[in-house]
Amino acid sequence: MSLTLQEKILQAASELFYSQGIRATGVDAIAKAANTTKMSLYKYFPSKDDLVLAFLRKRDEDFRVWFADQVNGRADTPKAKLLAVFDVIGEWMAIPEFRGCAFINAAAEFSLDGNPVHQVSAEFYEHFRSYIADLAEQSGSRSPKTLALQLSLLIEGAIVSEQMKRHSGSAEQAKQAAIILIENSLRDISYTSSTHNSGEKQ
Image (cartoon, rainbow, N blue to C red; front, side):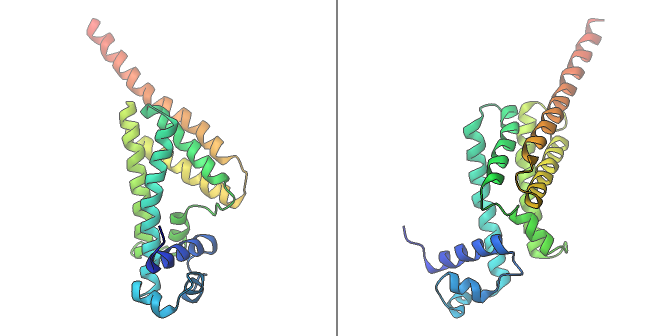
């Protein structure tokens, strides 16, 4: 199915924003890459800011669907899916086109909390942590939100580390740390349960 002009513009902008950076990419370059004019571009996206937000929202939607499918295809249980998250991240970071996380990059370029670009980027990681928290809760974690934050920080750190130095092995190291955090989180449940049962027997 052929793309509409609006879709071509957004696709061209997405590729340039991700590969070159948002501030470094001008509207002229986007129009040229989409084989159109600035006038046509502004017809669909009244400003560059509108185009940036459209890029981030589309990437959010596409990445979340792709990511969940990848994780579900690798594991059947919630606990296994928590670890599969790191495998998927590792494979994504290994591709030649990897330039870091678009949302971390965007938040760094637009660092003020009130900036819409910063807000959309922050919302992406809120959704991501919620996804991890759901898996953690299904796994039986006593503190699923805390575990989700810990695992998310490992992932974000691994992404930045890999962006700074390719083939750093950061995804595998993050996974090894995640195994410890997950086991400790689930062990809390086991320990609390066994202690409670022991008290009842007394």
